[in-house]
Amino acid sequence: MKPFLIRAAARNNAEWCASMSRSHGLTGEFGVEAWAVPSRPPLYYPDAVTLVPGADAAALVDRIDIAGAGACVKDSFADLDLTGVGFKVLFDAQWIHRPASAPPTSPDLAWDVVRDRDALRGWALAWDDGDGNADLFRPELLDDPATSVLVGRSADGLVAAGAVASRSDDVVGISNVFAVEGGADRAWPVVLDAVHRLFPTLPVVGYEHGPDLDAAVRHGFEAVGPLRVWLHG
Image (cartoon, helix red, strand yellow):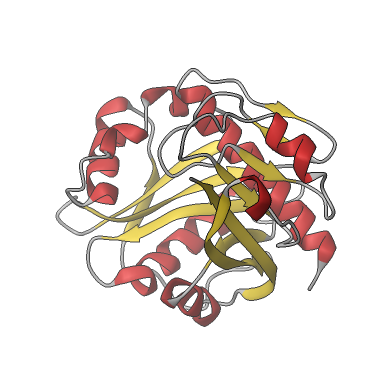
């Protein structure tokens, strides 16, 4: 485990969750131990993210809405026990880190940063793959200077892959990695090429689990420590 990298990754991820919540009109708050939003956040996003090991679980839960089922806590150091307040483990994952460098594999897709509503909608529809949740990514995200929605396009101009890059002071975080065909192994070369050109001095962080973690390792990431996501109800 590399606590300094986990702290940087957790803070970066919390900042991205805050940006996503703001795009839906919700304002969270950063505390010393955690970021939290008092109202239910967007789909797939946590109500709270711990920023340091040993966070006070009771104080954290007091900052979020657990009146009904569905509240979610990202336990960044996998060191909380929330079973006593009605939570169960949703999944375990690993924080990942990659030093600032060019990707080992040249991308076979042209990339760009999404800059307008129509392009964002096309990106979101490809990301969603017909699940009906493309509206999660709202145009307000385009106004966030720390957020870059990355798109990889095939030769015919169609969206073939993408991700979200979230820049913070010390790292750039990558989330929502997808490819229309070929999975993460198709997406990572174009995503890493884009990140290297946009933020050449920043190491790359994020989190993955299962086959997506294996794919990230194949593209130069290392697993640096565990996290756990808890679900209420």
